[in-house]
Amino acid sequence: MRAAVLRGGDIVAAEVPEPVAGPGQLLVAPLAAGVCGSDLSAWQHTDDFLVAHREADAPEEVFDPDRDLVLGHEFTARVVELGAGVTGYRPGELLVALPWIRTADGSTHTVGYTDSSPGALAERTVIQSGGHLKIPAGVDPITAAVTEPLATGVNAVLRSGARDTATALVTGCGPVGLGAIIELKQRGIRSIVASDPSAVRRELALAYGAHVAVDPTADSAVEVLRYHHGGAETFVYEASGAPGILGDLLSTAPKYTRVMVVGSAMRPETIRPVAGILRNTSLEFVGGPGRTESSYTALERVFEHLVRRRFDPALMVTGYAGLDAAADVFAALRPGAGNAIEHVKILIRNDLPDGGGIIPARQAPPRTR
Picture 1 (cartoon, one colour):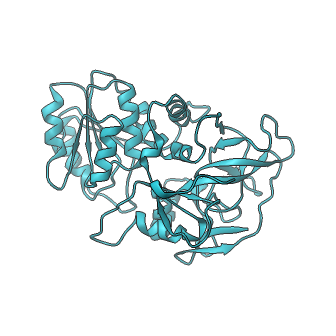
Picture 2: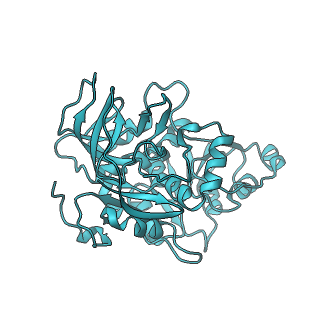
């Protein structure tokens, strides 16, 4: 079957073996899959990516860099076949996938980060049978693929417990930051400031509920936050991974601010801890489900917002591509130095013919299968 493969540092189109659903698993055909910042790091900074996961004792995303890897964990899919013992699903159902798989050695991995099973950048993949969200009639199964990346930002807001009397700053308005803005709006946060150098992303931030959108290359987002602060409890949701931003926030954000770090690059950061102590600023790092969660609450929360049409997922999809153009998608989302990112979310669709490159969202054909 066709797949987009990470091979020797390059993303290439290739034929890979068909996966087989084992006991407790589903064989599914991805409908649309996004490329996550983690995928970009695994591609461009493979060694640092693996070192970070080993240091953090997070083996579920450790893979062999010398073997082919099919990435992809943000996706919707159609159920093709049920493995032995699976109940509660049927062939043909459409899912927002919870991307996890238990491999033959009994270890659990995030789909797309094990070389023994393909991720969603393929015509078919295998997932464990638990935790997936069934897409109801009337919900577009293509744009619903933004659910997982948005959930990361929503998770930061849920973990912070921000209430409607608070003031918030979201730094970085890619899918993760936009997820935070969507949830902040639903909570009625009185002042939401968004910061991103991309005009496209600032416009999206406003559409999704931010009250003010700042270009950090021209103005200080923290100064705008201070203007709206008024003594309220203050939260910063850092989703940019910009160099030096944690140190800057520790020394400039209003006192008693809670900084929720939900996006970061692979490189080390330097901070001055005493600045945080003197300002009573908190740094909290947010990943997936919390220790008391039996399911991924944030994923379910985004899906609820989507199904009830509290935001339009299509607004953030700026392009589509077939599997053969996956390398173009990666390059567009991590351009060379000095080049702006012109996209927010590009979805890779198996139903698009080869040779089309990246198709602007407004020009993309409807789903054919």
